[in-house]
Structures are given as C-alpha cells and as structure tokens.
Length: 239
Image 1 (tube, rainbow, N blue to C red):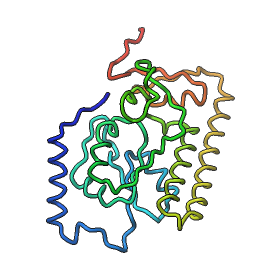
Image 2: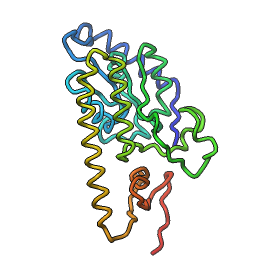
Image 3: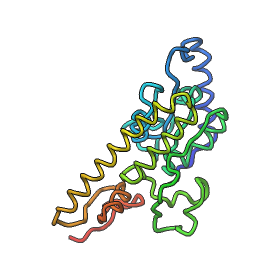
C-alpha cells in the first residue's frame, strides 16, 4: 500500500530539523572523534551492516524497532542525523522508501545511496505483474518487499552491504572482508540446519501467518505460506 505524504508536512519536518540544528549549536554537530554514521531503512538491515562494519560506523534505522514501515514518518531528529550520515543503505521496496526516499534524497544530495536489494530474484504480487520489474518508481509497489526473510537473499544483502562499505571506506576493506566472510558462513550454516530439519520432517509443508512476510523463506524451502491477512484485507478461511 503506497503512502501519500503531503509536501507541506515534509517542509514542516525539514524546517523543524533546521531549527533544532541551529539552536543546538556545537551540540548538534558530531564530534570529530565520534564514529561516522550509516543510515539504513529498517532494523533487519542494521543487523547486516553492524555485523560487517563492526566498530567502524554507528548504524541508525529510519524506521525504529516496533514501528510500522507502512505508516511511519521520520521525526526531525532523524532528519538531522540523516544529514550527518556518510551513506544510506536502502532495503529495496518497502512502503517507507516508496513514500519518502525521493524527498529525503533531494534534501541530502551529498549522501551516497546503496540499494542492498540489487540482485535479488523478486517475487511479484498477483496484481500489476506486467510492470513490477521496473525501477523503484512507477509500479514497484507490486513487488513483495520482505526480501530479508530468506537465507538466499540474506547472502545477497550481505554481499551488497560489504561492497557498499568498501566503496565508502576502502582503507578498511580487508577488515570488512573478514567480517563479511564470517557472516556469510553463519548464514550458510543456518541455511544448512533449516534444510536438514525440513528434509527429515514428515509433516505438512504449509504454515499459517497473519501477514505474508515469509514469501521468500517459503520459496527457498518449498513451503506453502497461508496468510490470514493480505493486501490489507483479511482472508475468509473455511471453518
């Protein structure tokens, strides 16, 4: 579901952030000895970036833990933090990015943006599939956005994150490589455990979930996801 944000609301937030920055004086500026900031969209991304970046960056999420990415609006303090960030790592197709990315980037033209969904084999929703392979504009809302729920995709996200970190901080490339290899092995080990468990399972290959957030997980392991709620509508289940 695409969220429509009025321009006046964005201007108000940006104006508020400017006032905060001005009133804060020196306290609003990052101390030169503090670690540089990388901003990500959601908490799952933060795991990947922190796992590879280690102690080289502070990682902050635009959509905080527990918030709904379909309805969340950034607060003024976040806009200030975004302006101080070294780079922005986007996850790909979630509603927050559809509503806010273009506006946010226009106000932080210096910020490098990296798409960690690059290379993922996307799942398309039933509607509008003829156009859903386009870029992040247009009909990209037809893409199933929860790409991080898959081990296969996690490896791609990790690799994209590693490449992005090397691009913005080449001096520490070897450091990032060691940590990336460790994360990759951890993901592969987790994948092997899941495969082993499912191979020995004689039960049903179907599972129920309220919101269809595990589509990529289901595809990876040949499972059938039955969602109670889909496209903001509750499904009528047989009794």
